[in-house]
Length: 346
Figure 1 (cartoon, rainbow, N blue to C red):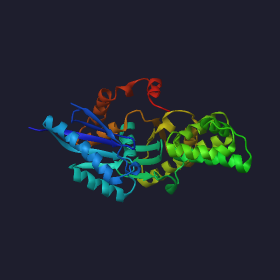
Figure 2: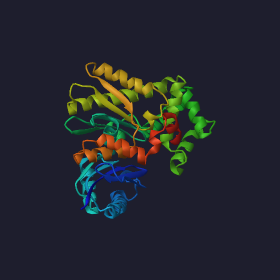
Figure 3: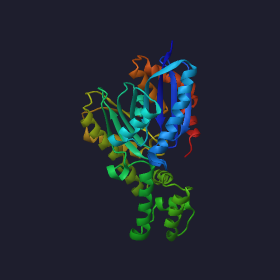
Figure 4: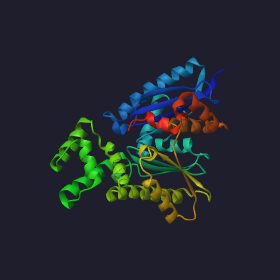
């Protein structure tokens, strides 16, 4: 008699995590693979297909050895922002042999991993920016996620470019001497404004000084009192609050406290609290009648996919099992906050 298993997948830009385990959390095995975001791969969806096939063949072999059948799976995939992309990725999953799956943007995994009720809002503020929600009826909605095209103002990529543009205008148009200017000069090891764009472009092309790393300079400058940097962080917080307001309307959340999960290094690193305070202030200003709780994501997103898959399989202990599997497969997640921060590169 075959055992029933679930599969949980978090397909990110740099890596993919897959968890396979029984309905009670037994025999959990974690597989790590290359990134599966089509936006970052030279081969696009064709390369995603190849990588997912390799991953699923490996997972299926593990299930076969355990005399198990995968009855439910959840795939959280980075770069999944439109219905066209959903259709393409769904076809890929079916082609590689996946049955009975839930497919969604990986941002939704933060809601399942970071909320008590299994629904709420997740704000992504890492290399990119995204705002997603799941309501009490399971309906999903996404705000942003496509950078300038959707008016995002968050994430290291946008913040890095904004920092460069701000310093460039300071130097060549407004003659402003700011903390952000100095920090960027130190970052690139330059002494003249005429060297700035040379080093920026060289860093982009050779990959040694990627634009998202410049986001941290904005936080450092804001902590030094730089009004431009402070303004950028406040604008970030207000933009996320406006996105939350749109989700509340679109998803018709019930009249109860809404759980908001903060994910991505620009939230979790705690380089400054200015943007989070601006977020709180804007929420109070725009929706004084609503209550919100804000917490940073502590569990790996793939745990959210696992909880979701277990819920779909009818498991009543999904959250509890998620905690147990996380302790087994991600022991570093149980470390004290300071120790956990030290494991992550800046």
